Length: 347
Image (tube, rainbow, N blue to C red; front, side, top):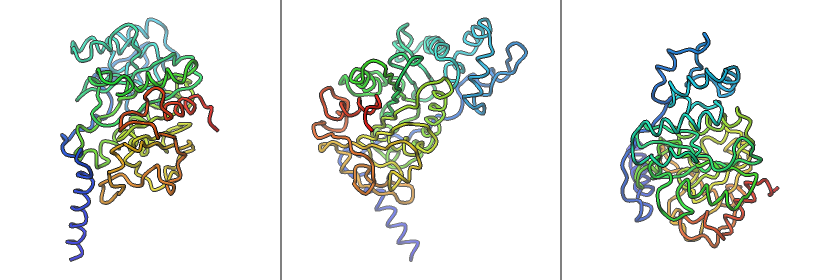
């Protein structure tokens, strides 16, 4: 009888979470892209100057940085030419080398959906064509940045939609551009579409499977930033991206973690995230995410509302934000606050 009761509760919770609003109606189940990029086997079998190449799966980014620091120009050119997908996604490799490698890797796909990413003025820090595609793009001069922010988006984002035509302050690249314009000189913003996001608003958005895989990738990405001497980042985590950030929080050296339009971060309180970062939360009064039940049971739901007083995050004003995607709109209180946090102006 008890087992039957638990089954009923779990089923009811699944319905509540997945059908919490009329918008949560459909979604295609996704398989998370994990592990090192294509071409890793050939990379592992290769060597330069008699030295084995660092394993993309097991070598810490700091070790990768040390390896590349010992190579001459000819060796660097060889690796970019021979292994562009690996070099372009190798955390700890020199930034300019990764930009060049990813330009070549994008062009090599011959896929029109990605063609704009191969332009000479794009700074693509990661590109993985597997699945729906993943990409990380830098806006600003990361080599000389005083402040670095990373935008972690939610559902329906991938390499082809990363910079798709839509409202200019939405989507990963749009949010990054808007934040950079508000933060001004000295700041750099990275649009990190570096994990397999849910499609639609179905069961994938109600469970943590994709977020767990994304959290591992985000933690390694931030370790890569540290390995090349970048400042500790501020993470801006939108919607399902906030679940990713919540799971990654204790494994990153983020200075601040800002969650916006969040369904929960898989923690009951900000202290439960076990991070030294300051934790911030924003939610618009008109954001439909408020209708999603803040529960977590048997793997369903993402837990407490980060904007609640009990959670303990610092609040970001968002009274003038429209809907679920308007947090980076120019002129909003939220964007002004984000810029101040990104620049380290709020204590």
